[in-house]
Image 1 (cartoon, rainbow, N blue to C red):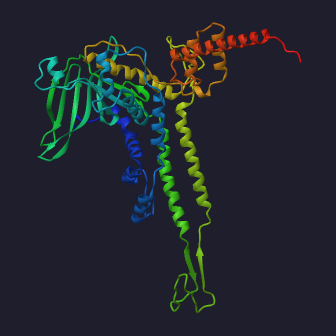
Image 2 (cartoon, rainbow, N blue to C red):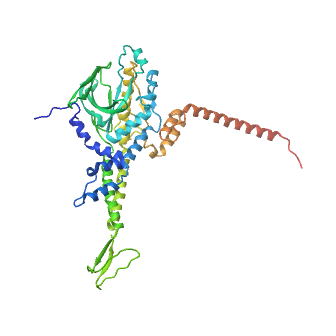
Image 3 (tube, helix red, strand yellow):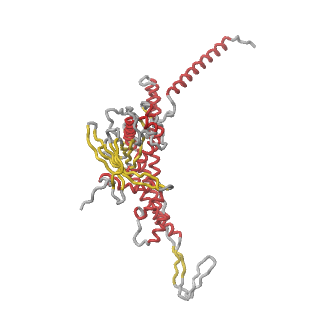
Length: 474
């Protein structure tokens, strides 16, 4: 008998992606989370008794390569402020300093999304407008402080969706999201309540479990938008709403390092505690082992020695760990490796754009998704706006040849490009500080040029005065 599909059940597509999310969650949780996972990521070996395994698990420590690498890589596109091609309307601009109603400015909010993208491969943003009970007009909503905002839904909260194809491409026709809300529980305490949000174009519904444990409709309502205001952000995109974590290989290597480091720690413990080996003793002999004691045996064949580890396995384990750490560094650096790319009709192929790294490709898709979110803010406010947001993507600029700068300078001197264009391109390859503004630099150049002219005039006057002075005979 087939089991009825429940509203909180993951679709097959999501369940397939979710197979690696528990591992990534544990790595991000650090040593404590990895220990809590127990045998899932640290197997108990054959013939290893329970107490020995518990001791080995309790002393294992995670090398946080995955968490550190994903955080560092996520920060790279945000080393400079977001670049807007045109300023947003005032109504939208007023929302950008607190886009999530939790105090996050758009740039810091985007960084948190990028971390999700690099860690899990997928994250979603619901651009929502809270329902104000009793509000009848826009003025009532403003008085209640209602305004659109961005709500983050991690990959684990996305249960499934349906898509339809329209004149503008594929779009969501249904979306299910799992949420946890906190509600009062008695006069002093609170409780967490799970619910599933089901979105369709122009409508929403909330489902909660009843006393029997069945999911039933809890609330529902309509929206003023005729589409689902939800945006996917992708890592290594594989399809609509689907992607794989860009650093998945690093995650597997990090788990392998966790296991290998535990083995190394165990063998070090064994090696540091030598085993006392006695032979030729009888029951009549008394053995007292200690720094201030001596042993006397009745038999001349008795012998007492310590058995110690040769250290060969310890050295092999140490080399293996070093090799794993090198492979992890390489797996993380793969995101920055430049590879040949096919430029679109609207792209200009230059030395910096003739190739793309994986991270650059992710950032380009990320820009599109971020623009969609800002566009949805405008739709809620009935303020049409087509944002163009650019993130920093010249991660390989430091590796460019010095000939690029020389070429730009020569092109400017020969009148092939303007001084301002040369200035901005030199900023892109980090030759000029990106915080320097062209207007300010142009004024400094003019002042410098004028000062140089004045110096020459003063030098000419001084030389003329010297030549005109009468000579003195001695």
